[in-house]
Image 1 (cartoon, rainbow, N blue to C red):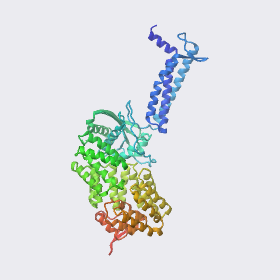
Image 2: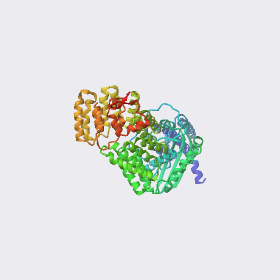
Image 3: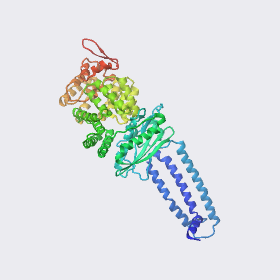
Image 4: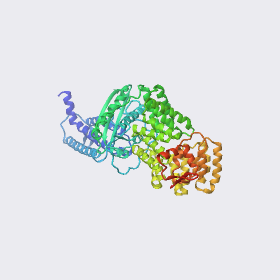
Length: 631
């Protein structure tokens, strides 16, 4: 007998083959159980992958043990070499076969439960080498499931792509590719695309396709991975129908990094073709934004940080400054830079409104000079026009922005703010509703929607929206509006608590002003303390004349003083006051005769004469005209 035949004969006699098969059946069972249970405990996919590798490698020591030892009535002992097969050895073989069959049946059962009974978890297509992308700065908890509603079959969400690059720092590039694909798809007529904020908020959630789609309100999901090595790029992507978790299309693309724009077009066109019956024939075209690859990477990094807002705005501004310095013809980079500048005063109390707006105006102008219909730059220009009091022009610019990018939740939100500043509450609510539909996990959209409900006197529903918005990170403004609700309801205990929440939550209150805010607190719920608050606030105005104190006067119940403060000449402080004065708690403020003077200065009178008076208010024609409001 030759060596090979002898080896296989011994493997059979020593039950090594049977032991190996039994171990593989046990490994399959353990993997099926882990795949079923690990997501519920928050374990990442990597744990299951390493379990597969470990159990797979374990077959070799198991077969080695089976070779070296034999099972006897006296227990395990070293195998003594070739001999005729004993009845005991045959019995061990049969029992091993039976055990293998039982383990296989259990493994098949658990796999069937995972595949057909429970919703499958959505995960990006993976390659053999995995480098986990770093988590976002702040995780957003998934909200309670929304009420069941029909989902538009022409809707889609792009989930964040997995970073499979050897360098974990390339996570920004994977996110950037997913966001760029999202932006391309958003320009396809008739296709509704969920916003980046909401899609990316579910990055770390162990949810199935149906659950993700339900939370985002979409019918289809795009997922994928990005692997970058040097100047080579490999992208895998797939389109999934959420209703039945069926994969409609999948492909892999290997390209040079310089082909990134044509690659985006190719992937988007493939997705559009896969949805052809739903959308009809659509030709996708991607504009080559820049020929400078480094400028493009700076843009992707900066845009990712801009989306996170807060302290990330400062490095985002530096990255976008560098991008446009490398390529002054990069319209999209100028537009994001303009958006960064216009929101800076909302996050940093020390930011100068006039300086920020001038820089935003310059950057938006550069973008529009290169690309006259650039939607983000048009939206920034619309907000700047509103700040200048050119409100009819602001609405025209915003309509152009929305026509160019109807899936931009931020533009819908800004459109709602422009309407709310003018007191057109119902139209503002419709815009906020659209923003929330496109970006359901964004606190700011939910919060402003809650504000319009508070204005309408729907206090219970307003509180629900505002509290959820606060949980989602929109803390300062949500607390301010919850305070407005408590004041409108006359609930002094709640008003005092909400005032403290506002002081704690609103990062725009400068530290040196906090003492004044705390000293004014008793007047919020006690009219007898208002004279004291008036003196404190007048002293604060004298000490910090560049600051806007009107809202604090209003919270203290000093409407006349609030109006005088609003009319006082000071550096540009934005329109936040106009957004906060339409609640029922501020009715007497709006009915003061001099309020129309403020409205004229802010461009509201001209807007009202052309577009209609504010909801619930009408001008009273008298010797001293004023507004008369129902609430």
